[in-house]
Image (cartoon, rainbow, N blue to C red; front, side, top):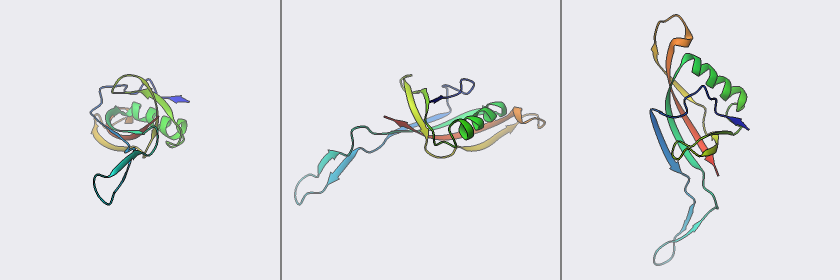
Length: 123
């Protein structure tokens, strides 16, 4: 299994949203409170992460996403931003990019990009 590239940010992201998949099934009753049960034994966690990358890091990321993870279909290991444990992730959607700065206008390496990644942490 592939690992998140060490040359890309490991922490200190602009923004992270961490949410869990709803693992409950609710059934309405004729009277009283609804019946609740678990749908499955392990729920997926979803991470939405914004990070800043320079042009060189973006090229590294593009190779990782397109080639290493086969356009996001393959899983990879990473460090959980919550507790620093090892986790298995997969891209939920393709990344989106915004150009923040074109520092000297002459090279792609000096451009500053904001990326938004949607990941799922597999149980």
